[in-house]
Length: 267
Ligand code: FPP
Image (tube, rainbow, N blue to C red):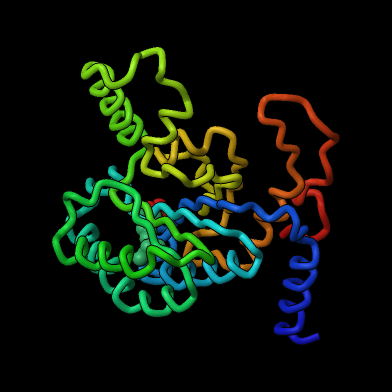
């Protein structure tokens, strides 16, 4: 059998194992490993980021195909400002270029774009394209792509705490009225259900200040693959693994099913 056919067979075998009734509605992704991928190839880190864009496009398509409804990706964290200025500027320009080039197709695909994070420190150019992309796609209802830019989970929680403290000191609410529901309604992700699954690439086993509140009960899947090498096949592996989990939310429940890692298709 040719290599191409072998890859197709492996992919088809994997896609057949997906239970379409149990696809997570919301998947969050930490796209990690761009720099290491580039270094491994003797290339500047920027090549890793650039390659990461086409992977994001592939995973977006695969998510839609599977019937997933929301993808939230960590594109730039509040900590990423500490990188060399050249890399920060490269990333900002990349976001601008990608948005300008892809927005028409994103809109045609009926994808709604939402940016999560504090956009204040970004240059006007990026802010302009961010606002126009959000405005153009605001009524699209097939799929939601959340892009986290200058996002930090702790900062988000502190922001909500301040807002509620102010409301309380103004007498608008009583401290006793502060509960999870109210807190949740003030988050940057208000109105969006929490992710059922978090995928992090590159083998790192950390949350890195990503969606700290929202990931409270999410299943975590760590892929050893660096983001520029991640693809639909690796994504399907994550979904199959997720579907083998026994989600108990702190309670007790049914017997676990076979784990993906135990199965004959793991690689
Ligand atoms: C982490 O890898 C990746 C980033 C900080 C940037 C991710 C951005 C993209 C993939 C572009 C997405 C484009 C849009 C428009 C959303 P790293 O640099 O931390 O890798 P390392 O851990 O190997 O150094």
